[in-house]
Length: 284
Image 1: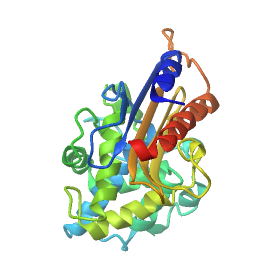
Image 2: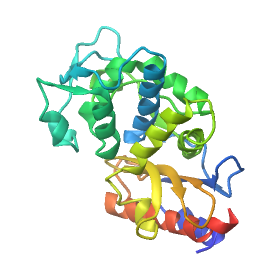
Image 3: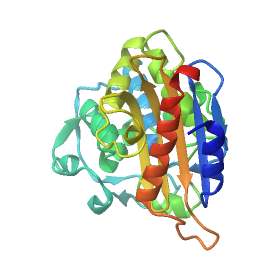
Image 4: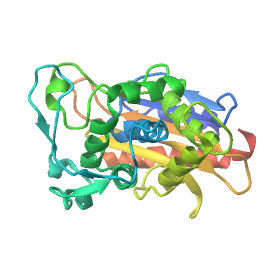
């Protein structure tokens, strides 16, 4: 499929589909509504990962020190009561199995990415703080993405605080991590970026962007989904071409607020974009 053919296909999709594809450090080869904001879902967890490693490098946190595993946290809405994470909304029973015990921040960050653990995310965020996550977005050159609350903070959500991303910003963030592993960059040291890249490479939820790639292709990525929303963003590392960043954000809501298509359809759509970028990898 060519970029023009992809454009025609995406134009026919209800809702909003945003795409950014391009080699690292180069202008995008393909953009479609790349600066349109979407609800972030779990894609914001990559920014939390970076904030944690930055805090560790600054000596504010020890990645390997055990921290208590709790399930109640302060709300981002001033004056609101503490909120509790719900295991029914989580993808990772392992962290819940540690409730009342402890785990290292390094282990929690790993589960936050590879299994998209909401409880691990809230625990890490409670240690790094929202301003540190905002700083990560700024350092990555994000123009429109914000993280203003933790996952499950319903009082903050109902008070108007939300987490937003764009395809362009997600591509920039993941590209900065992978590039930073090879040379000094704005986010963290090469050693820290290499550790973060390796966590993203270990992603276990592989039914969107990786589904459009040949088996065994390396991709350092994070995805996110809630009802009517599915995103995937990362950096593909081919053996026969330079690495390239790819981000696809889909919001399937119709005018009446219902989803225009289901999650399986969104995953296939993201895989189609990924396959198109892979076929063009030598020409990006």
